[in-house]
Each structure stands twice: as C-alpha cells, then as structure tokens.
Length: 165
Ligand SMILES: [Zn+2]
Image (cartoon, rainbow, N blue to C red; front, side, top):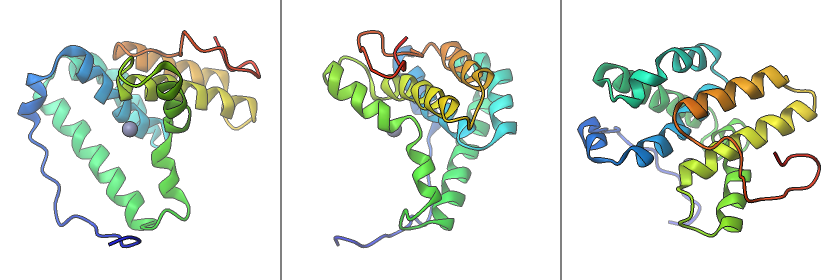
C-alpha cells in the first residue's frame, strides 16, 4: 500500500553467503557498515578501525558482530522515526553525494557501495566546511574506507565549491 510502513518481524542474515562474493562486492558492502560508525556511533567507528582487516578477511565472529550492530542501529533509528521525519535521514549518509556519483559516472561503472564510500567522504568534507566536524574526522573516515579497499573520492568528477579532490 502506498504510504504504509510495515516493520519486519525479524531479520535473517546468512553470513555464509558473503563467502561467495568477490572482494570488490565485499568492500562495497563495507561502505554501508562504515556509514553506521560515521553517522553517530564513535565506539563502533573505533571498533571498525581496529577490526577492518579482520572483517575484510571475513573473520566469522567479527563479521557477525558488525552485521548485528548495524541491524540494531538501523532498528533503533527506525523505531525512533518510523516515517522519516527526522533522524531516519541519518541512514542516508553518503547517499546524497553517492547517488550523484552513480548518476554522473553512469550506473554500473562503480558499485553502489563504492559511490557511497566516496559520497560519505564528500559529506564529511561538507560537514567540515560547515564547522560541524573536523578535518581529522574526515581523514579518519577516508582512511577507514581505504582500509576496506574503497574509493575515498570520485576521481572523474569535478565538483564546484572545493569539494573535488
Ligand atoms: Zn546504500
């Protein structure tokens, strides 16, 4: 039904399917994991900095921790703002710029998560320019994404206002 919101009764994540993915797809998924750390959970972000090599190596317990934490964060945020009147928009971190990158580069050139990764860094830079975060914050986000073998900038775009690299 248009305009209706239904929440799931449960979330099932079969982590064994991740083992079937090429490395590039795993990295792309990791952009969404980093998003959860960057959007308001400093402890989780620090944990990701410490554990990204294990996550990329598909350490089963670490992957389970990360997936559980992201699902819990999403559930908590959605429960607080079921109809996206406020904080649920946080879940779009990196996606506003990411969708522009996907559209400008042409769909299929970069994976969604790759565009979101670069979009997250652009969002961090904008936040920095608005005085909400620091250059060090942006650098930490970019470094973590690069650890996950993700692009921290859209190399082929020339954006105005100093946002290009
Ligand atoms: Zn996404």
